[in-house]
Amino acid sequence: MSKRLFALLSVLIIASMALAACGAGGGEAATLKIVSSLPMTGASLTQTQTIVNAMTLRLEQAGGKACNGKYTVTYEAWDDASAALGKWDPAVETENANKAAADPSIIAYLGTFNSGAAKLSIPILNAAGPLVMISPANTYPGLTHAATGLTEANEPDVYYPSGTRNYARVAATDDLQGPVAVNFMVSQGVKTVYILDDQEVYGKGVADSVNQAAVAAGITVIAQEGFDPKAADYKALMTKISTSNDGAAPDAVYLGAIVDNNAAQVLKDKVAIMGDNQTVKFIGPDGIFTAALIEGAGADVAEGVFATTPGLALKDLGDAGKKFYADYAAKYEETKEPYAILGYDTMSAALKAIEDVCAAGGNPTDRAAINAAVFAIKDFEGALGTWSFNADGDVTLPYFVVGQVQGGAYADYGTFTP
Image 1 (cartoon, rainbow, N blue to C red):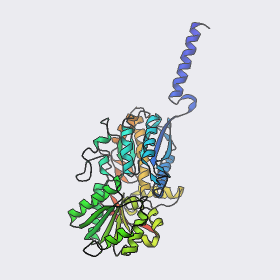
Image 2 (image 1 turned 120 degrees about the horizontal axis):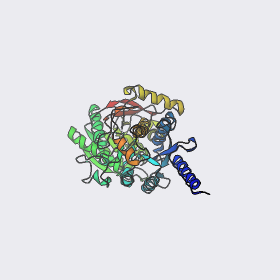
Image 3 (image 1 turned 90 degrees about the horizontal axis):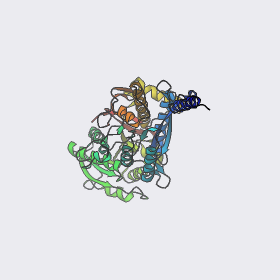
Image 4 (image 1 turned 180 degrees about the vertical axis):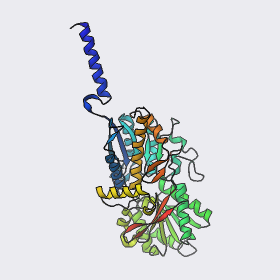
C-alpha cells in the first residue's frame, strides 16, 4: 500500500470515528441521559409514581429529542428506597449519586424526594462536573439558604465543596411552609398546638418552622416532641397529649413527618383517643398530603385532616397547568397528588437547559454547561406559572396549597402564601 493511500485511509477512518462520536454517523443522534432518584418503594410511592409519570409525559411531549433532533434524550427512574427500610435508604441514595457521578452520559439528576437524601447526594454530584440536581420536592431550607433558627451554622455551604452551586428545586421551602400552616391555624381559631415530628431532616425541619411561626403568631406551643416511627402504636402518646393543655386536649396536633414514618398509625391513634379531626384538628405538611395517608388510616379516620404542600390549587393554575392535568389524565389517570405538576416542571427545567446550551452554541454533554443553564432559567413559562431560579437555586414561587380530606380524598382548600 502506498504512503499516499495509507494516509488517505487514515484520514477517512478518523473522520468516520469523529462523525460517530458526535452522533452524525449513520444518522443516529447522540444520547443525553437524565435520571431521577426517588423512593419507589414504600408509602411515598403514591406521590413519587406521579412524579415519574409526569417526567415521562414531559419528555414524550418533546419527542425524546433535543436541539432540533441532534440529541436523543432518555430518562431512567431510579429507586432510592429499600425493602428493608420501606422508605428512602441513605445507603441506596449514596449509591445512586455515585453511580450517576461516574456515568458521563448523565447530564441531569432529578431528585431527591426527601431532604435528608439530598444532604447526601448534593456533595457527591457537586464534585462531578458539577452534575446538576433538580428536586421536585425537597423543602428543607438549609440545602440552599440559611434560615434563622431552622438551619445549621455551616449550611448550605457544606454541601458545595467545589464552591459552585449545582442544586435547584421547584418546591418552595419550609421556612415559608411553617408560616403558611400557622396563618391557616389562626384562621381556624387554633390557640394551642402540640407538635410532633419524625426526627428526620424534613419532618423535624418543618415542625421547627411551625413552632417558630406559631410562637410569633401568639399560638401556644404546648410542646414539640419527636416520636418513634417504628412504634407499634401511639395510644400512650395521644393519651398524654389529650390532657396536655391544662388537663384538656389542645386545639390541634401538628405532625411533621413523611407518610412512610407510620403517619397513618399516628392519625388512627389520635382519633381513637381525642376524637375526630374537627374536635382536635390534625394538621401536617406535604409529607402527608397524599392518598397513602387516607388509605393507611381509613377514609373515616382521615376525614377532616388538613395538610399543606408547595404549589397552587387547581383553580389558581393558568392554562398550562390545567393542560398538564388534562394531558396527565389522558395518558395515565386523573391524579390529585400535588407533586405530579412539580415533577413535570422539573423535567421541563432540565430540557430547557439542554435547549439553551444548544442555542448558545454550547455542548449539552458538558455537565458544567447544563448546570449553568439551569441556574440561568428566568421567567420560565411552566405548568406552575411563570417562575425563575434565584442564585441559591430556589424557585421564585412562594405558593402553598392547603388541602382537606373530604370524602376519602384531599380537596383543595385554597392557595396560601406566607
